[in-house]
Image (tube, rainbow, N blue to C red; front, side, top):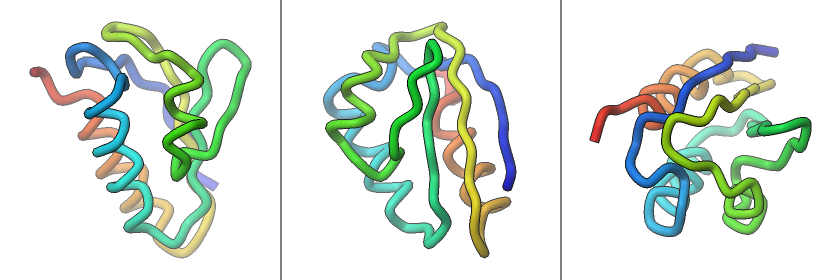
Length: 85
């Protein structure tokens, strides 16, 4: 299992369109991937789960992946979340 804590830099955060793109990217990996904010953890491959976290810009989130491509998944998704917009 690989875990990382990140500050969201995309504007306006993981809302609507960015959340959909994030989930689409997460679904490219076979590993189980989770997002965490404020003690609540959701499946990163679920648009409803990601949207339920209401992640705004400059908020800190945790991301974890467990599976055969966990390192690549964490790297790609971390880049997505921290990309300056």
